[in-house]
Image (cartoon, rainbow, N blue to C red; front, top):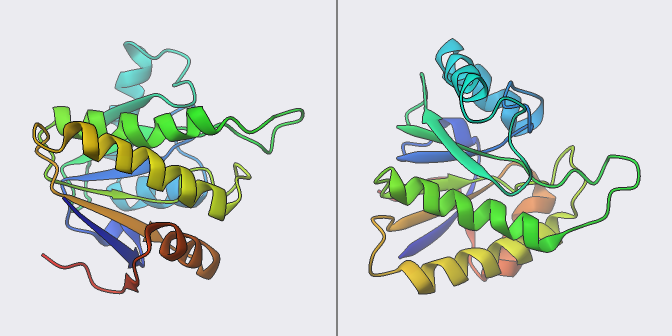
Length: 185
């Protein structure tokens, strides 16, 4: 299993699955969610509306992961997951649910036969999580998932994507790897 740190735009990556730090409504939002919806085009919103019309009429709960086709992205799938929103009044951090965002996204991608997956810093934007805490939780959740599923998962490459200096530093410290501006094939 290869883990890479990438500094750049997650929407430009040629991977099987891109993880969307989604708005729980699944109907788009700002930050990474807005960028992914904009780059994917209207097919992504249509696929999300189908999810809402089916098993997720109220959207998804924090920690849940679901997949849709990726529209105009270079990826095959978009895996949508919503972090607990710490910017809401009275919200308290729940590291277990944030960890579920990472591990459940990996399970969903593996079920869709993804060989490569790219993650943003789920929760570190508008949802108010500290990037260092996100990076540490991601490291533990991904590491645990890899140990458990290494020999049965089709996933062989995980790319952690940072879009800011603070997230890049947090990922580099937590994963003990340098970031690149190119993703190795």
